[in-house]
Image (cartoon, rainbow, N blue to C red):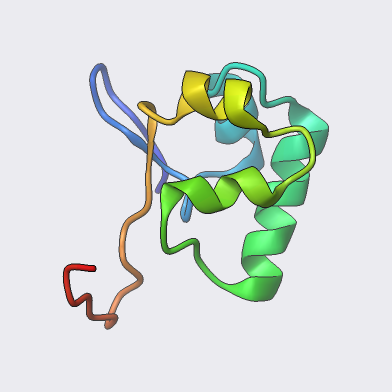
Length: 82
């Protein structure tokens, strides 16, 4: 879950706090714990840019991590391409 290999993207819906902090530049342990807690309380992210709702992840941080992350649909969910 959430694991990456060379060239693979980190799924922010399944990554652990340690993976978020260890693999994403500018994301430390405190912020990564907040991201995981938010995800557990509110469900999975639908789009990667939703991670910018967290204080500390602004345009610059997102520019650095946006190409490193993805969101995988939750099992059983459907998408309509929008």
